[in-house]
Length: 83
Image (cartoon, rainbow, N blue to C red; front, side, top):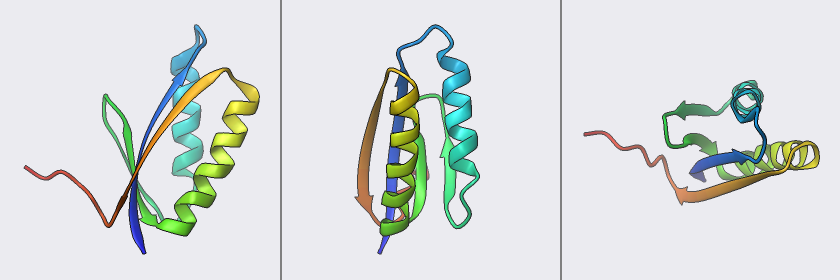
């Protein structure tokens, strides 16, 4: 099933920008998904099971190394706003 994840990462560190950019770099390294980032959040499009696997790995990696808050929203299908 196709799905959309909306992700917001809030590192509780002074160097939060570097942590967010590293997270986005890691996220973009996964093949088979589409990643779109804006000033508020990041949307990731792909297969539901694959997205859960990716988010599990990245959540574990970043929460083990940094004090941070991750917010996820999950929707069925490719949910992209197009004006």
